[in-house]
Amino acid sequence: MAGGTANHARRAAPLFGAAITTALTMRTVFGLALRQTEGLIGSVVALLGLALAVPDHSTLSRRSRTLEVPPLRRLGAGPLHFLVDSTGLKLGGAGEWLVEKHGTSRRRSWRKLHIGIDGKSGEIVAIELTKKESDDAARTDALLDQFTDPLASFTADGAYDQDRVYETIAERHPNAAVIVPPRATAIPGPSAATAPTQRDRHIQEIVAHGRMGWQKSSGYNRRAKVEAAIGRYKRVIGDTLRSRTDHRGHRSRHRCRRLKPDA
Image 1 (cartoon, rainbow, N blue to C red):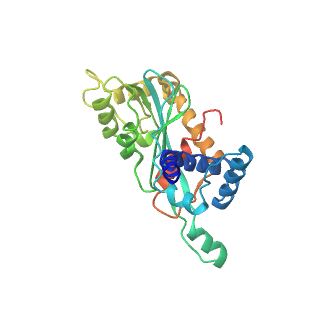
Image 2: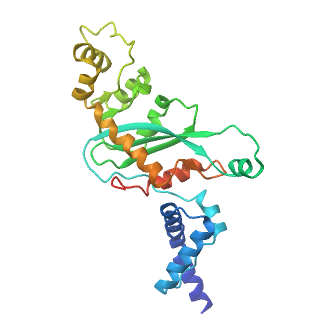
Image 3: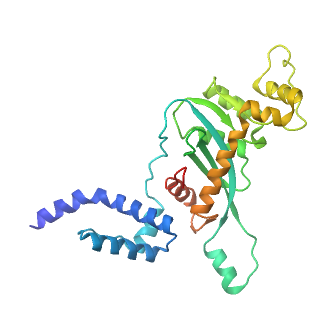
């Protein structure tokens, strides 16, 4: 009998990761504390009449730091129109609690969340969390590493108007369009008249038809979709990182998996 119980426990062990994932998902969706999450999961299991172990709040906290979260998987098919933007997230945790309790002054800390979405479906396909000082363009490689689909276009704001962005995308996806607005003081390169680069063509189009005309003809206006995705993240999940450890990027990736384009 004991052997049978042990075998059953071994077979059930892989399900515990799924239980942790389910519990953390419900915590995120309903904005619960860890103890509340433990109680909710326990109630659901009891109502269903299941003989399942309920992870306690300490286990949820500990496992959330190391839980293996599968990479974001794009539901669509075909070349990807990749829209990128970033936003600031405030750090919560012990520091904010001390300010509220003791009234001590403290410089507010932030992290920067970089998000890339499928321009067709609006689903999040790449995410990166960095320190607030991180340069947006420097995260291009890290975002592109998170999917294997062919790239049709890369659209981002003027912070990505850097040679290394064009070079990175040309190296990895030679046929992809780079749709980034050149800065106001930009001038065409020396070979613009005979062999214009994508950036040269953007500048020429802006000179000929104005910036608004370029935005319409280039498809840059689609970038509004990634701004909507960021708004969706903050509306559903919030603009604060609650973790007190350095596993915030891991948790943000888990939270993004919970969002749907129509949330």
